[in-house]
Image 1 (cartoon, helix red, strand yellow):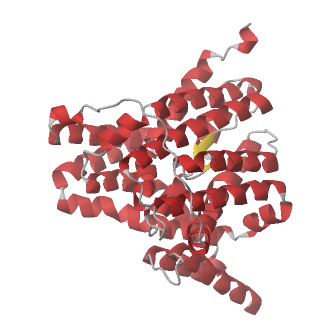
Image 2 (tube, helix red, strand yellow; image 1 turned 120 degrees about the vertical axis):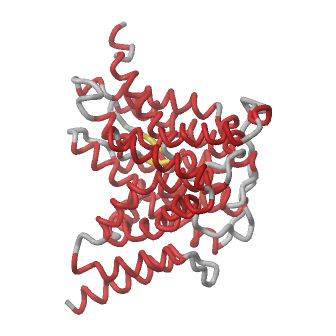
Image 3 (cartoon, rainbow, N blue to C red; image 1 turned 90 degrees about the vertical axis):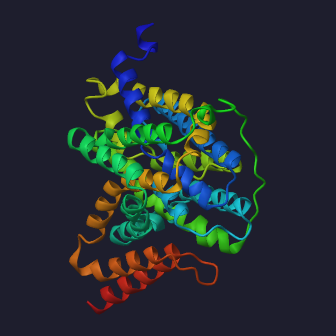
Length: 387
């Protein structure tokens, strides 16, 4: 019987993983969904289904393979959506792009050449594209500090001070500070949610070449390059042997199933994968899969109450939510900038990619991320050819 129950150490690890994974990034997911034109009910549905989907995927995959397979929503993908223009078809068009990105992920797992193509994108360019996506978002906290200092500064200071003690809990601490700001700023009766629970909302997808190439392809690329491929590498670094193709297809299938309910992308986790895979999770490597399973259980619980979380967040000033999003991404931005500029011979191509992506331009219906990666890729190839 003892072998069928999760050790208590893995239960506590799973709770910490879920708290870090959910509360460090749910403002980014909401910001991305809102930027795509989601209504409040569609955003709540998207957050709920995204959390439940990654929870169920972690439970099933970890139990099936007996490995700590940590699953997440694509935080870099959500950040990409937050700085992208809404498609012509509105949120319906965005859902079509989510489905397309999920289908590409499934195909990358089943058809080796596509998986190799995604992996062949130079790390410097992939990270530069991510850095360009994140830069406008990371500026917002300081704009907010000038415009709404009494709301933004407590969040920024809490994030900074908490990060000196524990970086993983810095953003959850900032979320708590933002919640207190909202409580003291809004009328108390209005903060009580009308509904704690709600059913998922189906959105009929629409498809266009512009949304599939302008949103779907960058969402696929940034999720593969910064989440799925690093997630596999993290597991291997701890001695596990994940079946990468099968896992890519599994999370891609989960993305397809959840997309019509508003969830952008489900993927393998990298940071929380390390938390589930190391010896702090459990001394016995054969028991560590329980940490990922328990994290999945807690993700599902958090997801069930996403409507209440979304309703509460609606009372926050948009700049306050932007502050939360920005401080949550500063560490990711720093890592992306370092990785983008690490190779001297590739810096010019990387800077081109970052600058064009950060510009936010839209040309011929294609967003800045596409043009940034294209221009950087051409510069990379020309430079290598001449060298």
